[in-house]
Image 1 (cartoon, helix red, strand yellow):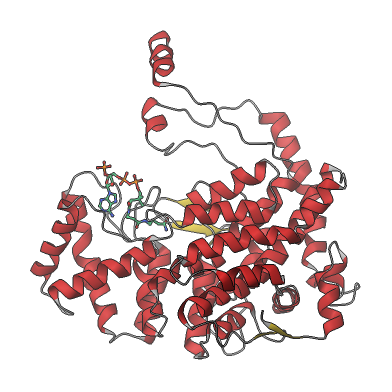
Image 2: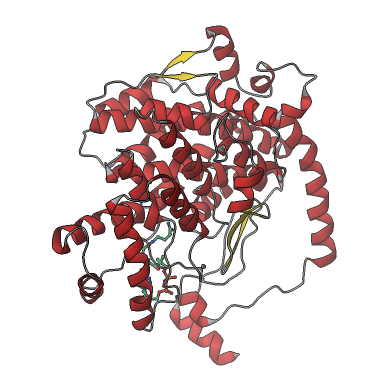
Length: 466
Ligand code: AMX
């Protein structure tokens, strides 16, 4: 388990459940840096706004459902409310209305750093406000104080075989962390449903705080014989601590992690990891169980695992056509991938119809820090060659790269070469968005999710009758 550079008493206090956890870190009078207090002032107002909206407009139609949509993975069906972010097909993601370049500009940064701190993004996602430096620092401190993981989880991780995929280890550890759930204790003691969000908030803060320790333990066990985990430094930010526990102290790598953990956090509510977390949470499964379910979805090759798949595919490409192939050779390799019934990983998207801004900002990071790297050059060449080929197939709706086409090359450059691990990094970041949303799910009192399904026979009958 990671050791703690924080007074033992303070650490224990911060692990306590309920509102006391935040208060030990700063005086009560300093309300502006108390995230829970800020949130508890916003929630009643938002509850009233939504209640009034539903009363006046509850029966207004916002879309329709076709037979194709039902067989086609529910594309385009507006069926969910998701507060932290909205995805535009052409423009990409906006976190509480802010694009990635805008977030890069307005969110607080580490001293001397250029990339936003994920703590600030979390504050924005959950409150809708851009935080101050002091508010972000308070979140960093709070996550450091809540970061210790119970010994049964450490033991379980240490007992896993190295051959077990890191995402399987990650999901299992998150599930086992539900021994710590504040929500479970509150529910079983009969807490009123108007207080659910408070317990979910506590679990959210604890879980986000613990994820870097869990993830770094998996990395050390799987690739470094369990050695060198180190400790959480209460004076450092979440990404610095995570990088340090992984064993990376290059300031540029830490900056990359700040950017990475910010941009992978949320992509509105319908993607597999977000929707699954929301769905499982709607049964009042606690945030640990809900998020672990989401992580099992993120582990699929059409979703988060694509960043691992991109690197596997690039390695195969290099071994077959060399480091700097001609465009013609590259085209042949891509067509062979398609003809053998496989997808080109890192390209395409269910909603986006342009280059993913998460790809673009990682490309800009590469242009700034590693413009001459041979793998980056290859990734850039792939960017030029793949889209026209995917268009030529006549069926791919979005030929442009998504976030996963670029993350691996950056990690490789800084020495994090274990590609099976990449989706765990994605998962650590994804917690920020989906857990912020889960707090709002409970604050708004959203019910158990239960859409209607039809058999093909019944669907045919309904269509005939219509
Ligand atoms: N390579 C080859 N074929 C592709 C393709 C790609 N990158 N993207 C889409 N297609 C194919 C589909 O497989 C489908 O073929 P089919 O009709 O024979 O079944 C056809 O094009 C139409 O698909 P679509 O409507 O354009 O995409 P979708 O909404 O069904 O799927 C996605 C979206 C992301 C799953 C798909 O583009 C894909 O498989 N991409 C590669 C995997 C990937 O990069 N995933 C990561 C996405 C981002 C993320 O979640 N992290």
